[in-house]
Length: 464
Ligand code: XIL
Image 1 (cartoon, helix red, strand yellow):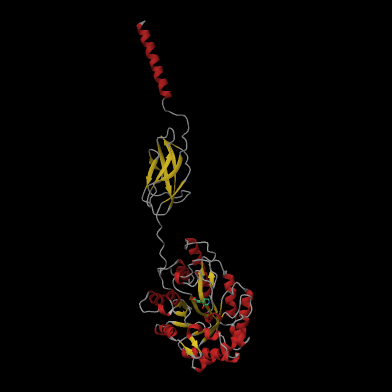
Image 2: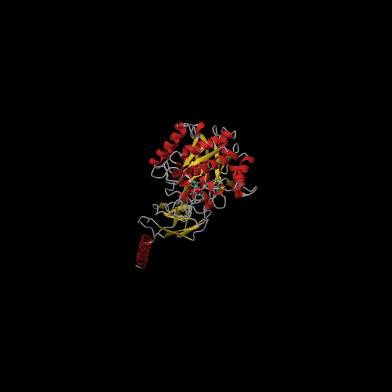
């Protein structure tokens, strides 16, 4: 009887024991998908990936990628096995966006992927260095090169200055930004201040750099003595003739080309109502070209190129029509060699087609084309406070576009493509009252520190 009781007790104990085993973790539930939570402790080169623990999971598999579709995993982070709810992801690059996700694991069972967490390391992504190739070096290697010009001030031309170095490396032509206009040169009837002009012309001649003259007649550069001239209209015209004759004669053979008249058409598409029109009459543009031609010929320079120069014609068709009416008239008298298109453009305008249509009108008349004052505004609406990456790329694209338009011109129509200054902070554009420009801007090829901008690379790419 005692034996029976013992056997019964043992059987009960065994049964009990097997009952214990069914209660212990041998789950028949599916493994839950973990929830990935935001990264923490982000630095330039690392972050901590976090997730919420899943009941019954033994470990976790973490993937890190630079693609949000995880097409390729970061080395060492392709299903990295981790226990716990966090892992340090290290050895990363600065300012790069990474993605992570996690799966739970129990034995051979693996859950689906969690949600994806995006994390950007701190720091600044090292800038791609701009292509350091010199502009004129690349242009001169073309089958049909042209002059690459820049607007200068005489005080920039000191040997060994940063301007001097950049100019000699990159440019093959110069235009005086203001010192060769009538108001600084003409101090009175028949009296002149040649100091700055002589310096600019000598610099070009000594260094094998082309010199473009800008501009003999411009309503915005009339010296006070002439704007308050009290003589007759005939005497006024004689003063203008004398000025043109003396300037052209002095620099005959030293200056390759002159803008004879600048901006004679207004934005309404009519002849601009300037003092020259008022006192000299409707034929004044032609008279000025004739005097310039006569002076050059008399001085033995039969190769001087005479340009008509204006702005805003690509987007203003009435103005374009009027400019080309003047050009036609000059051409019919064999007095003009080329048209200067200032191209004070913006990152939005004019379009490629508008520029091409405008320039092609000069090409169709067998005239030379000078893109004479190129700059490209990026803040004409004052909506940025520094040059953003996005705007800088848009500007680069626009520089590339105009250079490629220019470079595609037939060889006989090419002359020069001139940029209106060196450094952004010295451009005439920011806060310009002439232009009603409302704020700061960055329209040129070099920043304030004379470093190459993306715009410079855009210029180079336009030559490809
Ligand atoms: C601007 C210069 O950049 C300024 O420095 C100067 O004070 C005024 O003239 N159209 C022209 C250029 O033809 O001569 C002008 O240059 C810009 C507009």
